[in-house]
Image 1 (cartoon, rainbow, N blue to C red):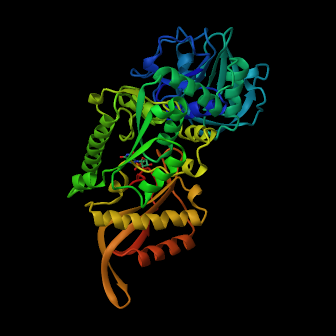
Image 2 (tube, rainbow, N blue to C red):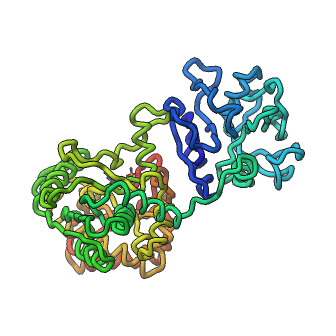
Image 3 (cartoon, rainbow, N blue to C red):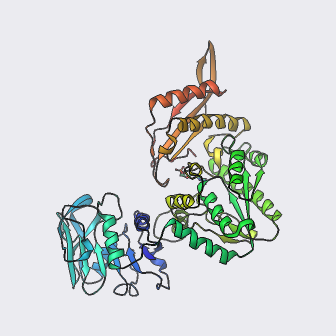
Amino acid sequence: NVLILDFGSQYTQLIARRVRELNIFCEIKPYNHLPEDLSEYKAVILSGSPFSVRGDDAPHPDLSQIKGKKPLLAVCYGAQYLAHFNGGNVAPSNTREYGRAKLSFIDHSESFFEGISEGSQVWMSHSDTIKELPEGAIKLASTYDVENAAYKLKGEDTYAIQFHPEVYHTTDGKKLLENFLVHIAGVAQTWTPDSFVETTVAELKAKIGDEKVILGLSGGVDSTVAAVLLHKAIGKHLHCIFVNNGLLRKNEFQSVLDQYEGMGLNVKGVDASARFLDSLEGESDPEKKRKAIGRVFIEVFDDESHLVEDAKWLAQGTIYPDVIESVSATGGPSATIKSHHNVGGLPDYMKLKVVEPLRMLFKDEVRRVGASLGIDKELLGRHPFPGPGLAIRILGDITRENVAILQEVDAIFINGLKEWGLYDKVWQAGAMLLPVNSVGVMGDERTYEKCVALRAVESTDGMTADWVNLPYEFLQKTSNDIINKVRGVNRVVYDISSKPPATIEWE
Ligand code: XMP
């Protein structure tokens, strides 16, 4: 296990991903919540940071239990921090040190840069620079602009690099991490989806025994993989609840239930559409919609879970980015960017113990675990779909008629993407029903009908996204189909905004 200490860099999660890609398990902890027991960590990585080491409010954690005692790799801010507090000199740099750079010198007598040659591209992002190395440091690499691009502290396994090995544009970044973690720190590369399934199932068995667990299924990847893992561990003691909030995609409720049945899961489908739609009547404010849906969901789920006698556990499909978000929201070093994570989504009065088997995994790892569990490829490749469903894709009033219109439009769009082989090239797609009517002409008649916007984005995690350049022929055909087949719609537009500054959903 590897510990990554987060100083608030936007790239910290990327470090974790790269380490996991080496089949090495790792955890991110905020620098100000250092674990008390460090014995299980074989190596430590210090992240970058938006702060300057010379600033008053800069992170200055006590590393006395780590430095010199465990293999340590300090990245960017971490490298400056080590230099600054060990007698080196860190000062503002004279030239801009952002983006592409090339290694002009490498000390090959050290195994740290093994297999990496001069000329290798690295990615820089810093405004301070290390003017003088600390005493007893050995320079390991330079770029044409940065003299001290990498160094090592003599007599200990402490390495520091000014550039970012975790970003894609540092060509040999993964090799460097491998050199440090595998060859220098001797960490075993044993973390694979199969091994994860094996150890997690054993842990779940030991933890839960023969107590009953309730799990809210959404039809999405995370809750499904969580359910299958639990099912493997505790079988019939897992009780899944799938709530139809009336805002799902067309035919989604039934087709998802059928799919779960085929997987042998014990799922109860609860159609609470009317309850949700009634509570949304006349509500057009986006945040109020989300709150109303959240509230009704808890009511429905609470009612249903009381029907499972003697349930002791609530299982959730929480994944690692949600956990990190919730840490940052409660005093960690990075800024809180989105407010809709599902950590701690249910009220205390439910009095259930919470079990979250995926809380250490990234989304792509959840998919890999799902594949290792034998879950259908199509299910694992499903686009994300927001909890509040079509409610946040109907701008303005949510009526049953509007929901039905949008379901038809969405189905034409999504089925079209599948037919044209475009579905898997898109990270998320959907349609928005806009609160405007516009004039059209059909036959010889004037129409005054609704407008829908189609949105398809590429992304890796939903935090940033760009619109997808769908073929014009596809857009043309889809637009025709929608206008001809869906009564009440006479205009289709395609959303070409990126996130930021827009968001993926329109509300
Ligand atoms: P935005 O619109 O913030 O969306 O760019 C990013 C990702 O989050 C999903 N999303 C939600 N998911 N409850 C959810 O469970 C919500 O209230 C919610 N709002 C947005 C969105 O579909 C996208 O994948």
